[in-house]
Amino acid sequence: MRIFLITLVGAVHLLAFPIALETLQADFTQTITDEHNQSVVYEGTLKAAKPAIARWSYTKPIHKEIFVHGDRVVVIEPELEQAIIRDIGEDIDIFSILKSAEKRSETHYEAHFNERSYHVYIKANQLSEIRYEDDFANLTRIIFHQIVHNAPLDETSLEAVIPQHFDLIR
Image (cartoon, rainbow, N blue to C red):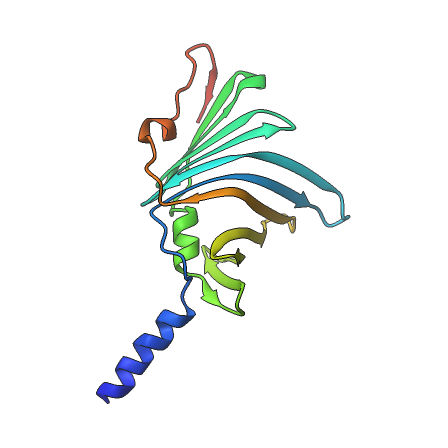
């Protein structure tokens, strides 16, 4: 029985996502493709830290900031001079998705999180891509570039600062 448990623990470890992340910084390209095969491409940067803090800074085609802090999201849209603040219930952080990812092949992992399947890909022992289908049957593909794992982050850069003149939507 003891050998079985040791073997089981070892096998589970081999099937788990292989990169231990505390922080993540990367540039990204996000492509969202609808059911008619029409796509929109966004570019930006991501900074994230455990346990569930992230800043998605979109730079193209529009500027937008999305801050995730546990179960709260703040979306700042400078072109509209507005900020949207909402609670999202359970955490949707990238670290929880990666932690639950199980090995499907040498480069492909799959995670099931909050009733959604995420396909996670690694290349050269770095996170390279995440794919998932959203609630509207859109396929989202996020490709990461210039990736830095576990580097110190200035946590103030992960805090949402809403200009006073922006409209607040809750």
